[in-house]
Amino acid sequence: MPVSVARKIAYEVLRRVEAEGAYASDVLHTELGADVRPDDAALATELTLGVLRWRGLLDFLLERSLKKPVARLDLPVAIALRMGLYQIRFLERIPARAAVNESVELVKRARKTSATSLVNAVLRRASTEAKDPPEKFLPASTPTAARLAVVHSHPEWIVDRWLARFGELQTVSLLQANNRTPRLSCLLHHAERRDEVLNVLQESGLRLEPGLLLNTAFAVNGGSPTRTPAFQRGDISIQDEASQAIPLLLDVHSGNRVLDLCAAPGGKTPTLARNAGKNGLIVAADRHAHRLRAMREQFKRLALPGVRLIELDAAQTLPFGIEFDRILVDAPCSGTGTLARHPEIRWRLKPEQLPELNRLQSGLLTMALNQLASGGRLVYSTCSLEPEENEDVVAAALRKFPNVSRVPASEAARSISDHLAPGVDAKKLFDEAGQFHTTPGAYQTDGFFATLLEKKRNR
Image (cartoon, rainbow, N blue to C red; front, side):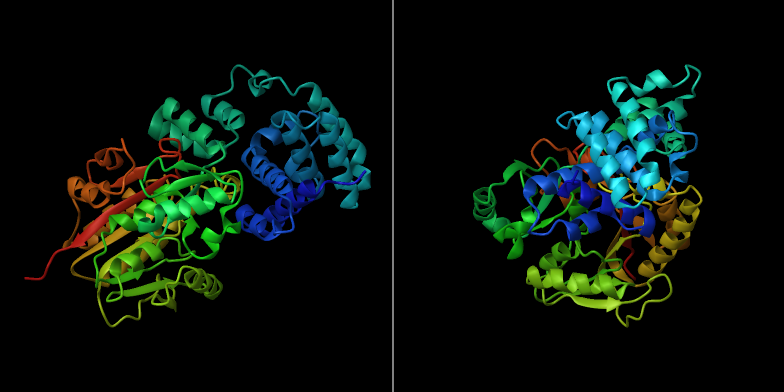
C-alpha cells in the first residue's frame, strides 16, 4: 500500500524536528514547493503541527498500550504511532483504517518491519477509544497541573508556572489558544494601495478577513499568500499582528537613526525603514551570517536597498561610533507566546533555560542602552510570557541606568492608537507601568511583551 504524499512530507518534517532540532515551519516551507498540490500541502501541515501540538496527550494515550515510554521507541516508530493516533482522534474525515494502514507502511518504509505488528495493534486499540475523553483515563486524584498538562498537551512545569501566575481560568484559556491553528496574518507594506493589493489576493482565490488588532493587517484563508503576485512583488509579508505592532511602538520619524539590534528574520525592520524614510539611517544586525543573507533577499523583494546589514554578537560589544535615536531590541527568547505557531518549543524548552535567557537579554539591553542617544527611545520586546524574560530584564536595566525611564502608559498607547482595529482600546494593551502585552486568544495573536524606554536629554 503506497503512502500518500501528505503523510510522507509530514513524517519527514517530524523526523527532522526530532532528530535535527529543526523548526517545523521552516522545514514545511522547504518541503511544500510549487509542485505539491494544495490539498496535500494542507494535510501535511495539519498532520505536522497537529502531532506537535498534541504530542503530550498522544504519548499519554499510546503508553496505555506500550510497555515503555514513546520517547524510548525507535524514532520512526514513535512518529508513525503519533501520526496514526492524531488522525484517529482528531481528523474525522480520515477513516481509522487508512490511518492505521498508512502508519504501518511508514514503519516499513523506515525499515522497521519488526515493529509493524506493534503499530497495528496499538492503533487498532486506540481506534476503539477514539471518542473517549482523555479525562476518563486519569485517576480522580490527579493534581490540577498534571491533569491540565495531559488534557491540553503541555509540559507540566509550564502549566504549573501559569497556574501560579494567572489562575486556572486564564491558564486553561492560554492552553486552549495554544492548541488552535493560528490565523495566517499579513502585513500590508503600502497602505495607500490597500484596495488594489487586496483585490489581487482575492483574484488569486484567497479569502480575506480584517485584522483583529491592527487596522492595516488582514488574515488569509484558502491558500498560501506566498504564491501570489502581491507577495512576490513585495506588497505584503506574512507576520503575526502582535509582531507587526512592536515596531509601531517605537514611533520612528523621518530622518531618525535607527538600530534593529536582533533583526533576523527581519519582519520588523521594513516598518522601521519606511518610517525613517530616505533621509534616515537603518542598521539591522544579527549574529548569524546565513540569517542576514536571507534578510538581504527579503529586502530585495520589498525594495528596501537602504537597510545596512551587519553581522555582530550584540551581547559582546557594539562597533558603532554613533548613537541612535531609536533602537529596537527584539530579544531572543523562550517563545512561550508562540506555542500555537511553533508547538515544538513546548517540548524543547526547559525551566533552567529561563535564567540563561535572562542573562543574555539583560546583556543585550545594556549594550543597546549604552548606544541610545540622549532623548532617544528604545523598545525592548519578546514573544515570551515569562517575567524572567520581560519585567525582570527591564527592572534590572532601570536600576543600572538612572537616566532611563519607562514612557508612561498613556503616551505609549498614543504611539499605536491610530493603527488599531475598530473597537480595540489602546489603554487595555498596556499595564500600569506602561508595558505592552498581548495574550494568545485575546486578538488571535501571539503573546508579546514590549516596553518603551526613553533616555533623559543631557542638560
